[in-house]
Image 1 (cartoon, rainbow, N blue to C red):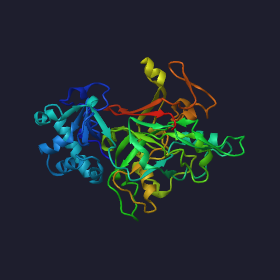
Image 2 (cartoon, rainbow, N blue to C red; image 1 turned 45 degrees about the horizontal axis):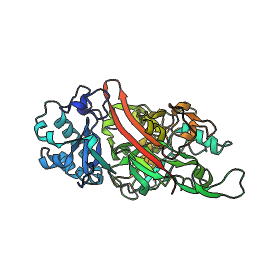
Image 3 (cartoon, rainbow, N blue to C red; image 1 turned 180 degrees about the horizontal axis):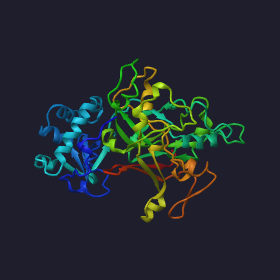
Image 4 (spheres, helix red, strand yellow; image 1 turned 90 degrees about the vertical axis):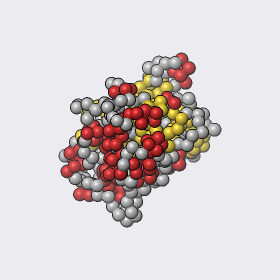
Length: 437
């Protein structure tokens, strides 16, 4: 597990004044990475680091040659249209660059004069995908979500017996993952009403979001090699917010026997900023398994995973309807949950994924699965909030929803707070539904 160090010090402040503002997503204790360029320009996309209300342009940092050793090697690799090379360098390089950036951006730094012209306002940038995602696996780590959805699809057998033994996942479609701001047409496909003799084809009627985390892999492993649970998080570069859009009526018809297909592969949206695993060190918490449940098999068990395998990442989701947008009213919050409720940890996901010799490559992504908490209002999908479409959700402006309508924008945010440490944030991930083609 990544250790807490001087970069996490709550008393650390930055010469970038906006980074010292209470409630800021990007204080000096965060320093997440993205790929960006100046808005509406023909510039090349390149690596950047968020600090306050600005992006630190890594092209200018690399060119200034103010770092040395691993930190300079890392910033040169991160100054690219995709972060895969940097992500593949491994933990020592990630940490060296983080420490160098923290030192350069802190109050009183001698490097302020060099980096002052390397800042671009967040409001004046646009993003690309932070890396090339070669492969993407979506897990199913919230037992509360799994039970709720199972009770709707399989009332007689909601939680299948393997769930408490195996970190369940399926191979998703990487080509349709895009960065925040994604718009996409309502998907079409086969559905079958309970009283129909044959299925029908047409636009999805039960479009949903899923409140998830994206987990980016860094340094990979060779085909045939495994990653042990005590080493697993050394291979995890960082985390983003992830909306895994879902067509629930398509899903109900197609998911047996091989799981999701067209219900999931039409669009998925990630937030632009990758919050590093090291930045999340202060927000770790104990992971436990109910004593009445099966305990993990030996390869999925470790003392460090028990002591600090869970991470308290708070997430919420809101909806902005066309009417809200036209009237200039604020989006309506739907729910809030935390990743600390996850039944399986990140280390267990990584270890299980490779236990058969499967190889990871830098930039591969894992989805956490919908993060629902133990209470109904902590549900991470409309399927759960509307109890399968049977109960309307009343929004702040009086509009009602059971599932998403054309024109709806879904906005997800994430942040971490802990006593004795500064708050850090993930920014947001936004996506808007267009009418079916």
